[in-house]
Image 1 (cartoon, rainbow, N blue to C red):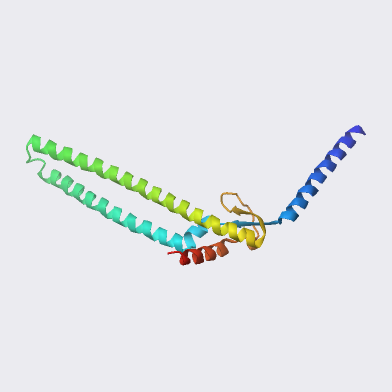
Image 2: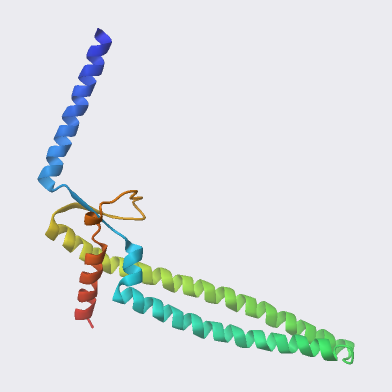
Length: 180
């Protein structure tokens, strides 16, 4: 009998806490929304422009690497064709030059990859910071208790009506259009 009383009173305490929390949630508003930041990055005007800029930079960097690769290929071909007729010292110098160019090209490629990753991270951070203001504004205006980021918050299910991503993209684009 005593064990039932403990369980029963424990359930009463939990029920009271849940009732108190739900009352607090009602007072603050019970709407919870979510946003897909990746979708904002892909579909917003600023996100599209930033990706296009990154692609231009990637193309420029790729051209530089292609020029270096052509020089390496030309030097390698020259070594294969004329290697037997070159003196030992000339051959060694050309081989060292080839190795140096290959090493330099590899380093440049790695540096360019790191630079592009850094720029992409900066772009994501900048747009993310700008979007937070829009999200806060929408959250206050529409009475949301909270707005979660779909991927980072591990939203397994979300009612499509709670997804405010498209609204955020529209307002963000409008806000960016106002600013030069």
